[in-house]
Image (cartoon, rainbow, N blue to C red):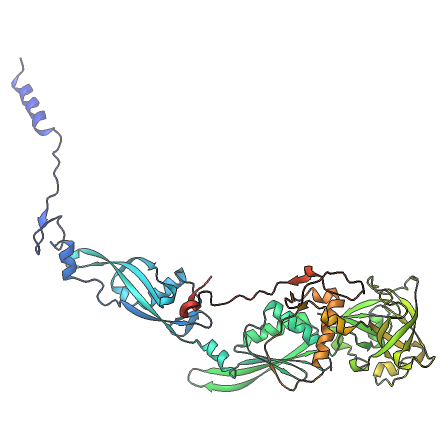
Length: 517
């Protein structure tokens, strides 16, 4: 039998130790429309709550944004222009900054672009925001902000279009009658695209002027020139205006760059000290190339040397002859010289040239028996009967400090420079071309075209020069074989580039300038 205590314990377990019951959340009626809704702090459904409260109030639904079509940049107030691609993170951040003050009263959850036609001049951004409303209730809302793109020219492009406003100018000068170095420098600038930041390029008699909107771009050009050609530079600045309240100054800077007055095919007379430091080479040398340094060769020994800009300005020398003083000779006889052992301290010898002894006669003196004997470095090109250009030192008056002090027996009678070819045939068969800088020409000489043709011929004859520049195929002249039976130097097809003309407006519409890569 169970006692009263056992019965009590059994009833207690059944009454108090059973599992707790689960309760479901009840619904309430909306105070506006009366539909059943889960309970919330406002006691209203979402639809009625939105009719009572608009959390996007005060946020503009249409905003203006400025875009420069010339440089394809957007204006970031107050005066900064930034490069942004369509539907990029940078452009989205720029759009949100336009309404940053209005978004401070809500919580931004998400922002994304809505696709629009690139030509529509419209940008649409879909925003998701949250805000605490009546009695602590949090309301979330999605809406679209439309940005109207207005065209406005930036300050930099405005200065470019004005063409008269500049803050820095680089004046490049070379005191020489021939412009071979400038033609070479022009192609180097085009290859490295150093001309893109210029406001204007002006060509004068003895050089070029590059105008820039900022001093930094001008300094970059000066640094490039110092690495490309042997030169020296100096700078100055002029005060234009001064604001005493903000303590700001407006200067115009001028950079003067002087290139060494030496060109290819010049006959040089070095100082005795410089000639000795270059390996005891002869003072009479020929300049075969001007790149970042002056490349010279001794026509008597084939010894070569390089002179940089700093060395030249410490030991300056001049050209003995003007390019127009070149005379035409005919080779009567030529013989190669066997290589001899070099003396102590001699420099490097050229492997591309052949030392020879030649008897030559002026084409203007063929009715006489007067011939000249000389040594030349062109033995690999010349044969009896060939025409060659050179300088006559035997019948000229030299006005040079170092040449006048030399022993007359050490001066050669003739210095041969280069072999002559039929210029008309070379121009007719030239199937390549070069690009040129867009510049203002003032006071141009009639001999510039002849000098430019000389530069083109130098490119055909010297591979070391043309490897630094871009050469393009000329589609007007049909491309022929690289081989030439007459021995005229030509540029191979492998060294030429295709001249591609890519249209900037790919779609043809007004808003095509907004398209980016």
